[in-house]
Image 1 (cartoon, helix red, strand yellow):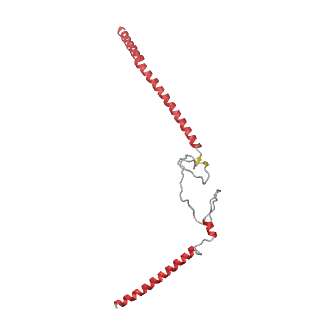
Image 2 (cartoon, one colour; image 1 turned 90 degrees about the vertical axis):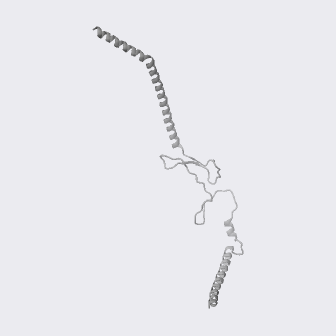
Length: 176
């Protein structure tokens, strides 16, 4: 009974695997026929759509197929200058599209008038601060000279004069 039930189970499995194999071969045959078309030859129309000879001219921005097209390699160029009062930076000059550029090549010129005005204002502030510093330094030197003159010449004379006045006043007080 065991050997009989074993042979019954293997027969349907063998039939099923033969059917799956036959279906797979048919699908492969149909896929090859569809992919390669008529004997592996491309018709003239599809060859033109795949290849085009290179020629110098303007680039036409025309996409016939639906979907999205992306470049294989992109380099993002980001303006890192923070503008205070405006929402962006105006581009004054830019290289034509399709121009090959290397590192450190000119790409575009941005409007720097706001930055130039800010630089001028800051330079004026620096010059003003430097002139105030020079004036304060001169005032300090004058004050130090006046102090030195007062301590070495005027102050001792005034002290002697006041001591003399005190002495004379005491003498006058004693005599009276």
